[in-house]
Image 1: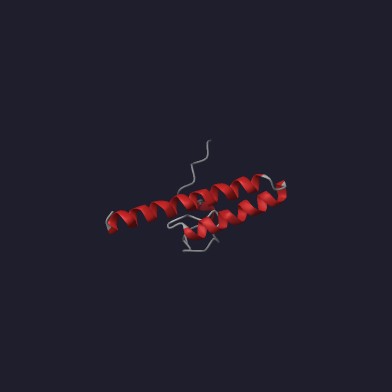
Image 2 (image 1 turned 120 degrees about the vertical axis):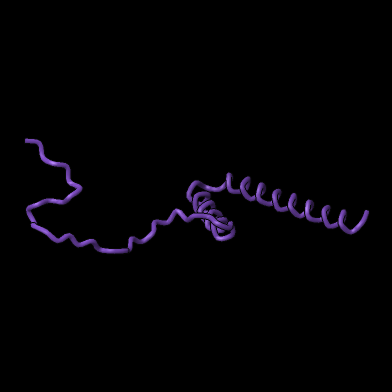
Length: 87
């Protein structure tokens, strides 16, 4: 077995160990009371969002003003994009 094979085996072994740890953690969470399970899963979700690249957060963004449009004309003329009123 050469170094590349050993490295590949070690990486695969570490991956499988990590998967089993996650499986065990979720199995343990199933035995918790509903409130504790929900709290734990929210914490896990937070960890995942912090560690996954290019993930869009579900938190609402704060609105900000990007510009103001001023229309000059008669105030009773209405806006140009308003549909004409039916007669």
